Length: 287
Ligand SMILES: [Zn+2]
Image (cartoon, rainbow, N blue to C red; front, side):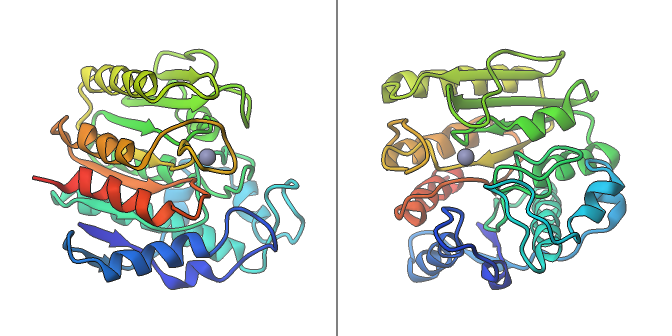
């Protein structure tokens, strides 16, 4: 398992904000301390504007340098452009490693799946997974699937990939919940699975299985995973009920599809995040 991370991504914070540097620092410590899963470490690398501009407008890239908050959840931070670009670069590195047949997880912040073509929102500044998918499609991949199991709807990814030939998007998320979208399928390639708060784990797993089966049926050559761990029972931002073993099961279910895959960290705000990620990685990696 290759973990892409950079301790520099812990360099910004807003007091009291749930998307905090400890999410990454504690997970990296956990992964360094364990011996069960062999881990190699990689740095994110860098990203060219051309790759970002497939997913975002030039105005949006410029806006990252303008020191005004984007919304109450999504403050401007000194250097946020650098942090956001590094997280997007990690997504491209993850894509590259997955193409080489490696198991890979990007342990970076900020997350990306709420960022639209023109707007930062929901703790997200650049849409890392959309940048990686559009890179894949521009460089020889004919069909790519996005599987988004973060508890919030991946509205930004959906908006960017909507009706893009070769891109398929599936999101399982709590509804009602932020950002309030994702109640039905849209276009010919975006499939939404809204789930009521406090849905029983068995039912939640059943919905995930159906979504994965449908996505695999579209015959993608690769699956990019927006891995959010806020559907956990003790996450402070949502009301779903998944337990640690469910994240192992999700990883295993993705692996069993037998399709090359890479995963990017999205949300997950409980103190148990390192354990949840570790369980997921063992599921993705187990032979
Ligand atoms: Zn989330």
